[in-house]
Image 1 (cartoon, rainbow, N blue to C red):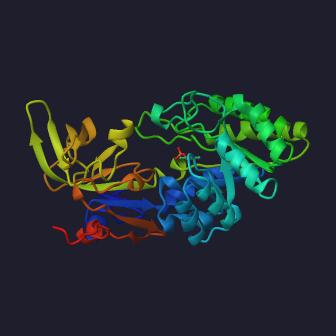
Image 2: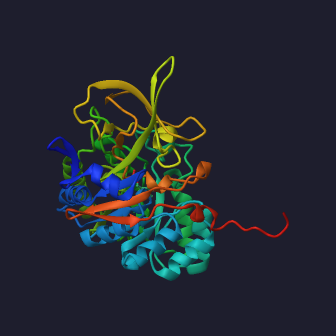
Image 3: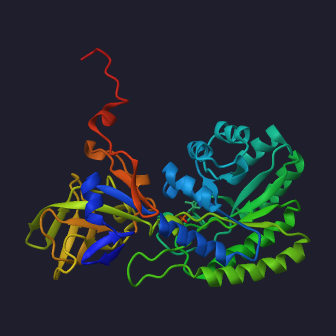
Length: 411
Ligand SMILES: *Cc1c(COP(=O)(O)O)cnc(C)c1O
């Protein structure tokens, strides 16, 4: 989003025009930003055989998946429904990795039938898999190296209390299962959670994963998951992809000669690819002065963007309607009957009732986590692609809210 002739624009289109065309609340994704982020990552790993599997739970709109496919990405999925959405978007099964946790054998079996890569994250499932398929279908193992990465505790998956992955301390057990059932392990995976700033932390996880390769001689790939950070506030930084790319490339070159062959290096960025591409547009219903603060109350809430409440996440907010306004201090909250604050004590260009606000960096885990609490429909989604805006998801209606409700004639 850029200020052009005193109006905020995306690819030259005034954001206000987009809001007028599709109404608010509205998610808008600028695909140029996704392309930029993808290319950045691709360039960082150009000297190793790598695959960028977009972690689609960040934003699963099928048009975004199609764009990722066009860019050459693979897909990381966490439910069988994401797998099937990916197939519908045109991905080949071998371009999709299924990394569920806590799912039943039925979902794993379905994934095998669909022919996608399966990533197993616990020992009981590995055992069942071994008994059922033996060496007939290769699997990847999700290991937990127990490195404590940054970010919020809830999005950190590497700690010792985490439910994710097979602990690296259980590798001997894994080895016994693999030997006795004849499982073919073709990949090792780790995903240590979100927001790793420091290449060093990432590399520590990598070392632990590489140490584990001694148990598995038929690996085709090593999947390093994600944890790549994007800046949310102006003081925030993003993962230095260039440095990470150089360091990982050097380390893996060494590893290939130790291991005796090259394996592919896979990544699963979600947030890194789509977060900055998205803005969430809301309208100010009421400016309410209380004894303690000035609230800007908008036509949305945590039912549409839960990250601030759920993760204590910072999202920058811009007053689209008043680009030159004098900054004042506001608490931006929603219209839900529950505390649903988007931002506390934030300096924003003077807000008037009816103003349009943009909540920035809303591309990842924004729409995806939206819900119908308070019987409010979910927003529409718009994609700005090659300089034009397209509706890619209709706004929900009252009919949508009632669609699956059943009224047996008893009342
Ligand atoms: C959520 C998830 C990702 C993506 O994480 P981001 O922080 O959005 O990059 C990658 N891999 C797995 C297995 C995940 O569950």
